[in-house]
Length: 139
Image (tube, rainbow, N blue to C red; front, side):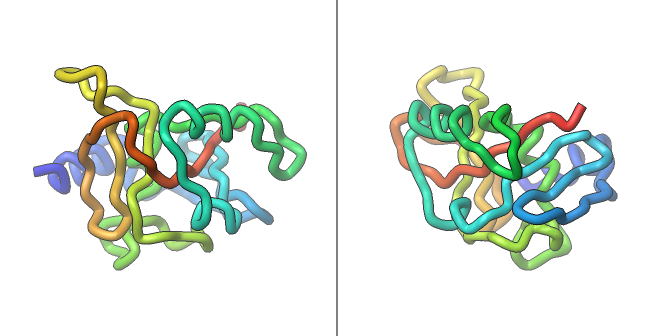
């Protein structure tokens, strides 16, 4: 069911996003988002409070205005044709769950995440530990 949601989202909002790898980031020229893509995305995991703080304090490629993605943003980097379930432009990938800041509408104590080992989209308690991939707007 969730894979179907991802497919529909990608079709609706431009599955063929034009990504560009530049140093420690990947730029999505379609959504105007810049994604963190350094070794830390495969090593660092935290709860939601610390994840938000991590992104807010991140300095990467001289940029300081990083934030935690919402679930709609996080879905845009998935790639259902790729065995890693993330776009091929991303060099640093763990086959794990990456957290979003989006709350599950039926239970505010749960947050949405994407599992890049299976491509699944789901939700879990907000006190759990997940990996983090920060982003920033380019415009």
